[in-house]
Amino acid sequence: GGGALLMILLWIRWNLSVQASLSAALWVAFQPLLLLNVVRVANDALAYLLGTAVVVVCMSFGNRRIWLQTFLLALLLPLAVLTKLNNLALVPWVIVVLILQGDRFPVVCARILLILITFAFATWHYFAFNLTHFGILAPVQEAVINHQAARGLLDIVRAPPLMLWLRWTRGWWIANAMWVGGWSFLRLPGFFDAAYEILLEIAGIVFIISLSRRWKFAVQSTRLLGIVCLLACVEAAMLYHGVQSYSAFHGRMTTNPWYTAVAAPWWMILLAGGAMAIPVRRWKIALLLCFPMLCLLGETYGLIFIMIPFYSAAPSYPMALGRLADLHPSILGTPTLLFVAPLSISFLLAILRIYKTSVARG
Image (cartoon, rainbow, N blue to C red; front, top):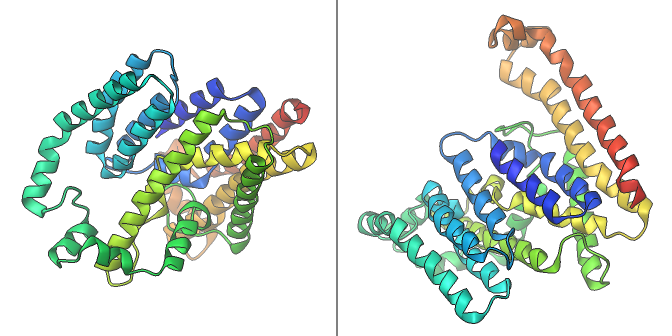
């Protein structure tokens, strides 16, 4: 998870201006859903790392060193998909981005063919096994249940009403991403959730306005289109999983927001870029500052006042701290927690200081 974040931050620094890269990096690094994704267990973190590597490589080279880019994609793409099927949405996206890079048609065809042949060679046994044993290529639990029940794709797609699709999409990208610390299903007080949603919705509206009014955007147009296509491919995969689960479990959708893991940081880059396009400096700085500050405050509050009391199941807070201390070496006893609040305050002051000397000049 840390490696994936490092690759994204390096891409931001190399491809955006100093002011834009600072804002985008803060929005990516402080998003609570990122904390959830980087501490996942089993194969999740590795799949997130490999998927992120595919995205970064595909968005980095442009017309330079195209064959190095092609060979890296041919290596990373099948590894990412075999690690976790969530990354299957990257296959059509890679093809679209290679076309958007504007090489000569024979070169584009050769690159895509090389990647697809390598992908087929590396994954054919996996998909053949799935077809033999489950009757489908992608044996997610929901799809297997629907296949065994002889439900066709058209029946599955028609099951949920359109408004439900829109509600799911809002939940995946906006409404359900303010998690409390790491892999946790606890929720913050309503104020944090409401403020988080409002800030993202404002940033999304500003992004649309910035395109319609041709404001100066922080991300170069080809890469911007690549990010939009990435979000579209992941959204299509999410909707596919959503309707499969809705049909399999009789009206209960089980597609979680963290399935957007590989695209979520780029969603933040898109919104931060839109906020950077605001022509009024004070409004721009206010929006760019509020989001990372809200996330940091929310995570700090959740860690101290929600997670510790809940997971310790202690009748009082001092006893909760004692139980927490028992889980760690004696050198990391209860007083260690006292550093959390000052550390968060230091982060907030650092954010303000950086903006005062950098973004505020832009």
